[in-house]
Image (cartoon, rainbow, N blue to C red; front, side):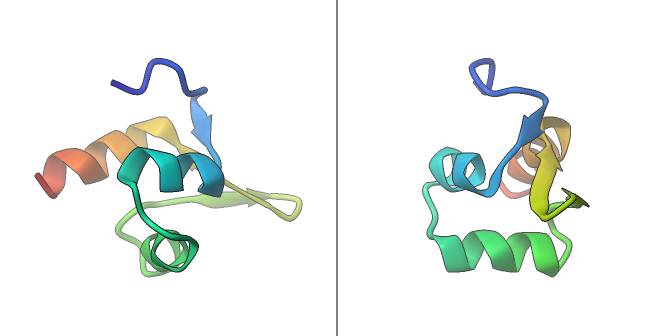
Length: 58
C-alpha cells in the first residue's frame, strides 16, 4: 500500500496518502492521532504511524 514511500513521511506525502488538505494534515499531527517529530524545521512522520492511524480509523 505505501511501498513507494520512504520510512519517513512528509506532510506532502501524508496529504497524498490520506487525500486530505494541508489544514487537516497539520491538525492530525498536532493533535496526536499521528505521532511525528521535527528534524530541524521539517516535520517527519514514521510510515508505521500512518499505517497504524489508517488501521485504527477504517
